[in-house]
Image (cartoon, rainbow, N blue to C red; front, side, top):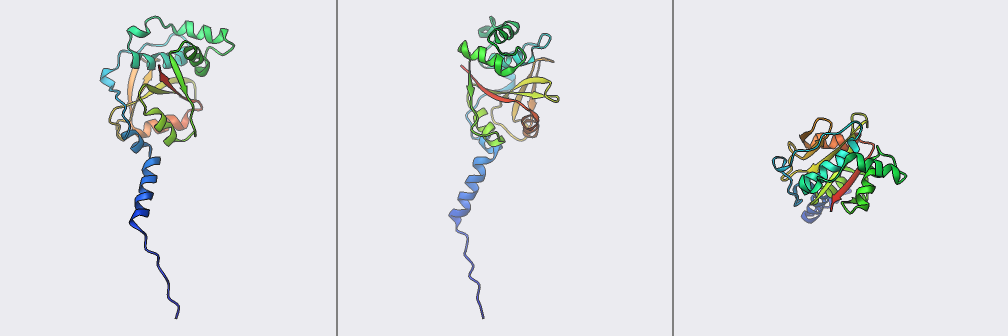
Length: 189
């Protein structure tokens, strides 16, 4: 009669597997971060003029980290015009960001992979935000990480069209990331 040999699962194997899952779980990544962004402490954001949502998404995130006074001289229309003069498009967030990068205002963060865990890991760092498109990629907003993120309150969306600061749940954040054709992470310098 043949006997089967069962290999018992070692406790360390289960611990390693759990650790690997936690390293790729966006909520756990965010909760282990040292970010301190409170929605109540954010200054009033600027409303967009005409078709300037890409520039305003960048400017409003910079205002959130630097304060209104530090950004008083920044003009959305001026940055858009400079992007066009540099050979870019005045309605492309990346081209507009390039102007701010050259001015020493922003730093672009390269993503190692385009997945939710990597995006969350890069976003939940001090001074960082992500620019995304919503409404079938017709409107740009910025999203900042929240302090003490949870499933219910994960991040803050700054929307220049309505001048709103919107608390996003983890599912809302995930949806914004998954449905945006363009996702760029920046760090305010």
